[in-house]
Each structure stands twice: as structure tokens, then as C-alpha cells.
Amino acid sequence: MGNCLQYQVADEDSTKFPFGDDIWDEFNDSYDLNYNYSNVDAAAPCRSCSLLDGSSLPFFILTSVLGILAGGAVLFALLRPLSHWQVCPERPFLIQLAVGSTLFSTAVPILAPGLNGVQGTVLCHLAHMVWYGSAFAQAMLIGCHACLGPKMSTGQVPNITLGLGVGLWGMAILLGLPVTLATDTSHGFCSVTFSKSHWFLQLSHVMACFTIFTLLPLGLLGAKALMKILGRWPCPWVNVLWAWFVFWWPYGVVVGLDFLVRSKTLVLSTCLAQQALDLLQHLAEAVAILHCVATPLLLALSYHQTARTSRSSLPLPLRQPSHLDTEGAKS
Image (cartoon, rainbow, N blue to C red; front, side):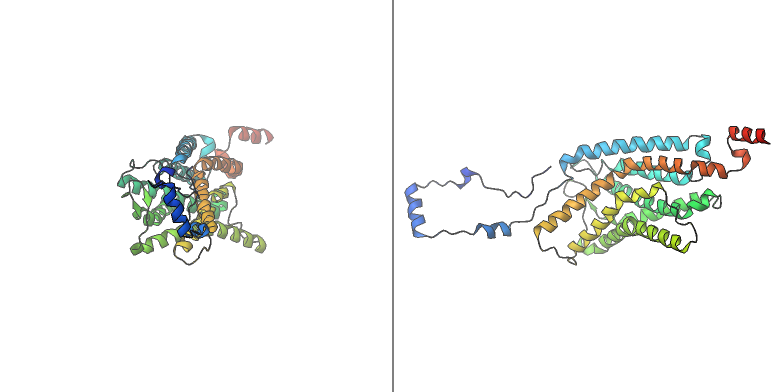
């Protein structure tokens, strides 16, 4: 990690002058040197610790490798013609979530700090598009899955999941365009630079992150509580996939706070507050990156959570042979 909150002190050799000690004695006697070092420290720039710098490159690479392996394993299991996956009505949603998680994992090392000069302009734009587009798509897929889950388990929503998924992916790509257009490689590394003349790009990106990563899960929780109080529809359906928002909810909050500070809407009066915000921003980004490792595990748990319910709702010819034999013996 880099050094933080340490002011550069000049080297001793650079402060020595070729004058004799007698000249310095006369100078000190003639002038009263009374420096206020507290004012000098207060005028120094506010410097924050950078958690995600060049030294964090192993974290990005390790997370990317684990995410690709886990996501690839889940995709392989989902796409194989196995009967216990075929009977799962959530299978199209699970496949799309696994694809989004794996795509995100491939973009993680490209945007890792410490790779200055490696990324080209096209690769930088593509990596940011994949990074945010896949995250937006996963969030919206989980939201739709929560609303359609009860109907899918009873077979009321046939042949619409694929078309709905294509529409959600298209919307996610559109939401990722502002940050993609704001990428810059002029300084030798891939970064996001929002210019003042294109302030609407930054506003669009912040609103998308805050709405999808923060307001969407809060809305799902509020709708679930309201439906439970009213005793009406089971929508939205709560399952283990909701844990995905734990990784991205802090990121949406911190991005919104950072935008308020940069736009001078929220003024931080102390350097400590700015350092805390910078630290939270890096922590939130690190937690969000870890979602690509946890998502395949959530997908597997989601299948085991609903497989028995889905299998019991199927017609008799599609059930397991052992179950059929049991029913025949009883009859």
C-alpha cells in the first residue's frame, strides 16, 4: 500500500548552505525567526490512503481467476443436459446471472491498478462496459426473478424469460454507456474522467448506480413487507439471490456521496471526513469486486432451495422414475 498522510521532508543535504557558523549566528541574532508550523501543516494538501493501488494487483488477479473458475463451473453444470437442472424453471435466469458474473470476472484484471500502459483505448472502453453492464444486468435480473419467482414455480410464465433477459441486458448496456464514454487513457492508465462539459454523463452514471444498487433492493424489501402486511400476493419472492445486493449496496451509497461532495452539494469541512469517504469508496469497490466469486455459490444455493418445489410441481411423466414406481406400488 502507498504512504499516506506523510508530508515530504526535504533531505538534510539539500538544506545545507556553504556558509560558516558565524554567519548563521549573526543572522539569528538580527532576526527573530518564529515560524508557526501548525499553519504550514494546515495548508498542506489532504492525502488519503489508497487501498486499491499498484500493490493490490494480486487481489484483482486472484479474484478474477476464482470468479472465472467458479462461474465457468456453474455454467458447465447449467448447460449440461442433466435432468435435475432441466426441471428447474429458474434455469434461464440462473444461466444469465452466471454469464454476467463470469464476464465481470474477465474485466477485473484489465482495470486493475498497476497495469499502466498495458490497456489500450478500445480495451479500456470495453472493460468498463463489461464491468458496469454485467453488474447492472445481474441486479435487474435478480429483481425480475424476485417478482416472477412464484409464478415460475407454478408454470404460469412460459417462454418469456429469454426475451425478458435480452431486454434487461440491452437496458444494462445503455446504462453502462455514460461511464464507458468517460474512460480516458491519455495519462498512460485506464481511468474514468468526467469533464465539466459532459457533467450529464457523470450524473447519469451516479443515478444508475444509486438506483439499481441501492434503491432497487430497498424497494424489494419494502414491497415484500407491504405485501406481507396486507396478506395479498407472495410477490416479491425472497430467496438467497438477494444476498447479491450485499456486495453492491455500499458501492451505490458511496458513489452517491462522492458525487454530492464533488458537486459541492455536500461540503466536508475536515480532512478526516474526506479521508474517511475515500477509504469507504475503496472498501466498497473491493467488496463489489468480490461478488464475482460469491455469485456462483449463490446460484448453486438458489437451485437447491427451489429444486424440490419445482420437481414436485411437474406433471407425473416428468418426475423421477423412483417416484413413479412408488406411486404405482401404492396404487
